[in-house]
Image 1 (cartoon, one colour):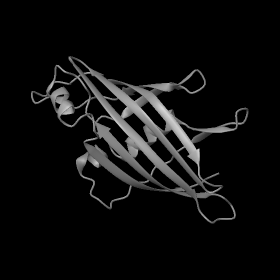
Image 2 (tube, one colour):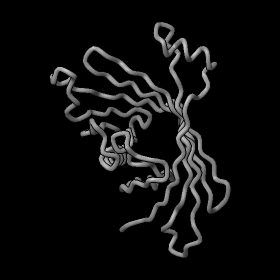
Image 3 (cartoon, one colour):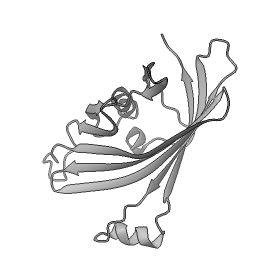
Image 4 (cartoon, helix red, strand yellow):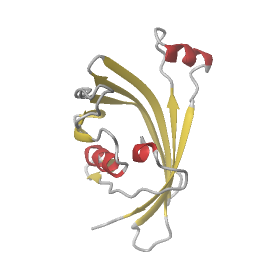
Length: 182
């Protein structure tokens, strides 16, 4: 829910991201723990993520999100603690050149709340371009997020999933402008 559902097309949001260098394997990982908390804070989520459990060395494909205090129900009673489990189900990356890199990943998020389980699937494809900068501190990117319904035959969403033949039902496009800070 970007900016509590009040963000418009063309609005911008600024937040910090961190990356981890694995010099042994010559890889760079997004610091998902830091980045998720930074992003939900910047987007002013109604129920912000307070803690992320993620061990990129042991299992980089699983994250656990613990949310802060939830919103209130219509009768003013708290809705209870929520937790999210995110599973990265597929990843791929490709270098086009010395200045262009593309990454794609597919995720399933399971949100657990008292008396309710919500499952959502999404795919994120991002193309990064190192800008013509002698310091190599400026990267621009284009990111597209595709959202899918889940194939649960016992729900209305499962029926709709069959009607759309498992295709994406929503797309969100983002422009990224990243600058290294020391």
